[in-house]
Image 1 (cartoon, rainbow, N blue to C red):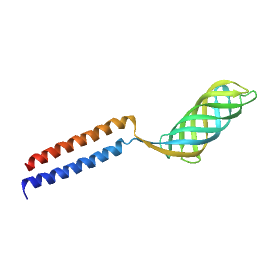
Image 2: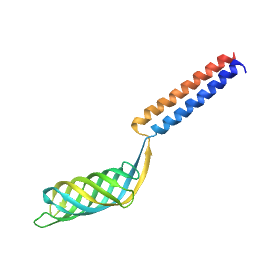
Image 3: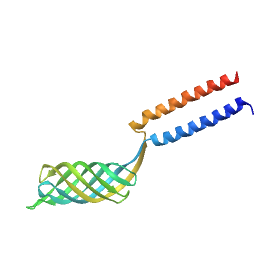
Image 4: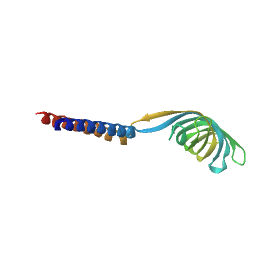
Length: 173
């Protein structure tokens, strides 16, 4: 085997290795896998000023993982409860953060900050525990943190392959 053949084989193996490493990098830079939840929430709520009752309504937002996890989103639904002196009924809507445990018929625990309109009109905060019924759809995307390194890795691969081509051309002449 001639020296130039050995160099070409070594460079070919090296370029394949660089390509495999770039593929691995693309896999890690691809982004985050999170879920989008769209469904309903029924459960018990404890709000400001001694308001306690049940809630039922629409729950939408993002979940950290398609099988459950940290939830950030919105809730809009009914509140039926009491303030200790009498019944309080109305519409409760606002931003809600918590934990979804499971993907379908999941348990939900979290806090809500929003408005209660009905027999009492107020801005409220509190906790909700209940059952979230719906589905989590997985969404994979390139994150802002992953896009720039991905472009850099591809540019580096192109530059390295160009340099390898020039090196091989010089070896042949």
